[in-house]
Image 1: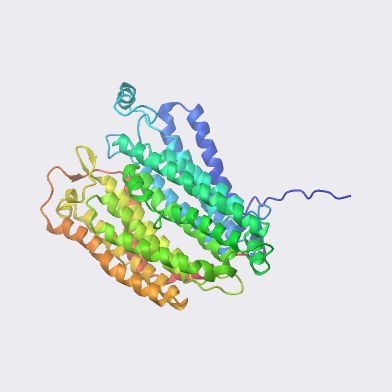
Image 2: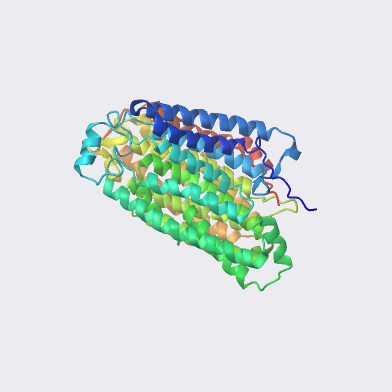
Length: 520
């Protein structure tokens, strides 16, 4: 008599994700049971403890014997070197972003989030909530839910698990984008645009899942790859499915032509949420993209590599060219993010693989994302500190003369701009050198030359901001707000990481390179 095998679940190995998810659930309980005046402090303590405990579990799991790695949760999650590295990076960047969420000193004891997000902007109920100093402390469990989705998304070993994780990652971000305390209408518009376009991209992704399943008869990535060499049906289903999946993944990366949401959402969302999205969403999406395309579609790479190469070129071109014309700092950083997505895709396209599942460029991709992540969170944290009587100063002209008002902060921001530009002795330079070298070794020399050309043009975008801060007359009424350590910690770490990774990149490069083998 046949018996059903009991389900298996590796609790210790998956404890990092479970800890973050449990903390998010506990955050909802806090919102329901804890008195209002204690909720904010309770949520801060919860997320700091949760991320710390999750990181401890991650280290413990990593130090287990090699045979403890493999397919987890009945084959739904792949626990390999890239998964460990991406989980660690997501936890670090998630913690730094949530610290910026917690900042209260810049706005007279209030956070960057609306007092009553459900109230109509300008209504008496909104005024009443502002007067009572209400605030939405549920932003912390929402961010933790999103972070847990990101961790599963980049580690998913089957397409259905990837889709569920994609939704868990995205839905909280749609809400968070519409909860800005200032510029409420702009924030709500950004949230609606993000939701509509995000739902459309998710539909494309799910349609791609269905088509690939129709071709292969399986959701498992390795089984899909095996079916390519021995197809049951024609390849029309496969090619259409690859395109659909690519649309869903490239939307989250912010690549052209699926980038339209990026500048509007970055500008409209609360700046701490923008910092969280700018690196954590991109890191999870890039990890998922590399896993899907090289583990599931590695045998068909000749068909999708030209497509991604074309996307990389137009992404770099549009991001750099449009950034040249920007007059808003957050919008400039948004188009900068788009151009960096193109640079990352250069290494994704030019990757070479070994027989053991190693993606030889993944270490360089992850190094680039780590260097970019520290600089990005620090840059957006600084944006929250440059203020006038109405709040944050987003107009680039308002940053004129900042070097005279606060040389330390302006100097840090200049270092971050140089890192974005890829100037030598910064982490950004080593990151670009790593991804360009990987693509060159992969036979995409023409793509590397195009990327170098766009990098040279992009340098002007960042240098003009530095010149404005140090060589222009100060703008009246603009000052640097007095921020607490919640904001200064990400700013300081961003500056230190940008300098350290430019001077001593070896240890991190060795670490990410040694753990770049994806399980098949």
